[in-house]
Amino acid sequence: MQWSRKTITETQKILCCLICLLFTLCAATLYAAGFEDVEQKIKEHVLSNGMKFIILERHEAPVFSGYIYVNVGSADEVYGNTGIAHVFEHMAFKGTTTLGTKGYDQEKALMDKMDEVFDELRAQWAKGDYADATKLGELEAEFKQLQEEASQYSDGEEYTKILEQEGAVGVNAGTSADWTAYFYSLPSNRIELWMALESERFFDPVMREFFKEKDVIKEERRMRTESSPIGRLIEELQALAYLAHPYGHPIIGHMSDINTTTRAEALQFFKEYYTPGNMVAALVGDVNADEVIQMAEKYFGRMPARPNPPRVETAEPKQLGERRIKIVEQTQPFIAIAYHKPEVRHPDNAVFGAITDILASGRTSRLYKKLIRDEKVSISAGAFPGFPGDKYSNLFLFYSFPAQGHTNAKNEEMILAEIDLLKTELVSEAELKKVKTLAKAGLIRSLRSNSGLAGMLCSAEFLLGDWRELFKSLERIEKVTSEDIKRVANEYFVDSNRSVGEIVTSTDNEEKEESQ
Image 1 (cartoon, rainbow, N blue to C red):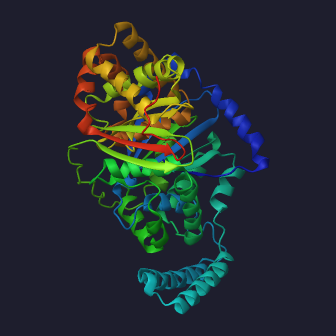
Image 2 (cartoon, one colour):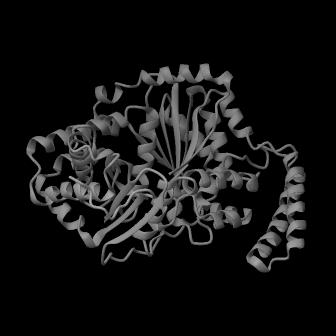
Image 3 (cartoon, rainbow, N blue to C red):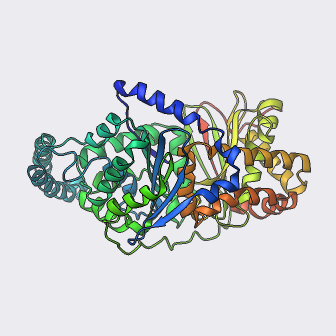
């Protein structure tokens, strides 16, 4: 997932602390009200343009959290435009024709001219070694001059500044393989400000400071992927595991695509995927549901209905044999083992959750006890499902950082041994009961905050098909049996369904067998 962090000024820190303290007053609410009771208190409203609002009144503190989820992520991209979902996420903070500009007519004329020059630059780049070096230099100089002139008419931080001045906390956004989310919290007397700003940025966006922001994203990619051995390996492992499905390309995109993406392409992406019927909003906290609905009609109702975008049709073919990738780095060794598994709506999804908790949740988990505590072959080991997304068939990922003097091979052997135990021995009722209790407690804890619940309601709406499915999670967890775990392990954790990626330290000899 890619996050776009927005800073908070020094003068807002006291407000932030006060609001955070108010949020803690809500901490015990879910326990007191009861899990099922919360579902009954939620109100749903669908605008005539198709946008859905999910509202829960919690009046314990004068604050609320607002989330907007858009049902689009990197999986909806095509090669040539990878990373464009993340690019537009950045653009959504840059304002409109009236917000973030010091003279839109002049600014627009300069942005249009920049687009023309950038198209010429792309044409030269496409020639590779045959590009006209003189022409390229002239275009780059002209483009830089236009950027400087356009910057005199723009204030791409005005949107965030307004929110900070009004006491917003946690102004942020994120892009995943499956969705794009925008979220923050405000004092409850600023609900109409939330409606006005959020609707405006999706009704009248301007691709302001587009090329400057692409430079920020490129630096982000350099830092998280190209300068990170693990980042490079995970990107290689994704591509290795997926031959057809777009889960195989990175959320942040390939550098060549980020370089050449245009403002026109980003705007077209917005028009295709940011349709009201492809968006859901959740507001949780000190709000009045009837007032929220009235304001939603006023502000978001002006967005015209448009056809919902197509969904990904490409299916990943069944893997026919184990795949491996090894990269050599002057860094700590690392190993990741990935198995294909079904999408989040599959009946066995809760079983994979139980397997995760048994093997990798905390100091009582099997991987921790075996690899770290007892055998001391690893300094950190874990597992999680849903990589790189949940909407489509995805990966169950195991990983380990070998301890000094121990190899990837030994860690892989011990991880596979723990997986084999799931295939051959039934999990005890006591262990299963423990992980169920932990899973249910973890779910309830995640819903105790306004922000956590708002995010999970939006996520459930798109990933599970209906936000109400969130409240069936406890029931699904409770139904998991030891026989289910054994069956699922035998069905999916097989050699032919496995992809393995490892980082080998350049000074190590991985061919030498590790002493026991």
